[in-house]
Length: 246
Ligand code: ADP
Ligand code: MG
Ligand code: MG
Picture (cartoon, rainbow, N blue to C red):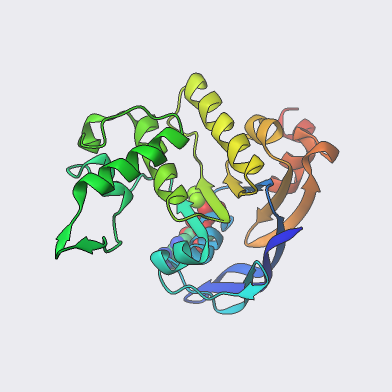
């Protein structure tokens, strides 16, 4: 079942075409890798999906509906959340406050019910096995814990699609295992994960399918079970692994 489709999408920055006629279908509940060398256009494509950049042409169809989000919050409300490589928490706000960043809290008798917000945040933190005090300022937390807060924030709006841009670049092996456990749980809940990484071993371990970008165009789309590391390298750089390591 296709949950998200990108059709004939194009994007230029000034005279430079950075995405050329991109077509991708994402299945419900799969982990879909997006790979390619630096500058291939991965982040630009994901920022367009997540409402941070506009596209020049093409369609984005989520759950049968054409969407054209003009802000990250609009995209999140439609069901697409992104977790950036550079974490975007506000370090002097509490963990709970960060969950609600950019949203206007409901008021009761003219006041924000912070107790309720903290209780809700705690439920989202438990979803990702994060045992922290919701009142703690996020600057005191580890990178892995901050990333879990970002994932909690993504989950707080019932996403259909969660995009993770190079999610393991500052994680230890143990933390990567925890992240993979969360990804498996999201998949079992029917949430689609788009996983951007250079780390092919990780992709072969956790993803179901892969799209390869090179210079803004798709050079391959594969089921993970039907591909190899060597084939992925070849599609990424246009050379086989043997030529890479003669
Ligand atoms: P990747 O994530 O695959 O490394 P990017 O999407 O970041 O690739 O970049 C694709 C191309 O678009 C690169 O040539 C990059 O320099 C260019 N680019 C990305 N963002 C901008 C921007 N805001 N303004 C101008 N050029 C950009
Ligand atoms: Mg890059
Ligand atoms: Mg990038």
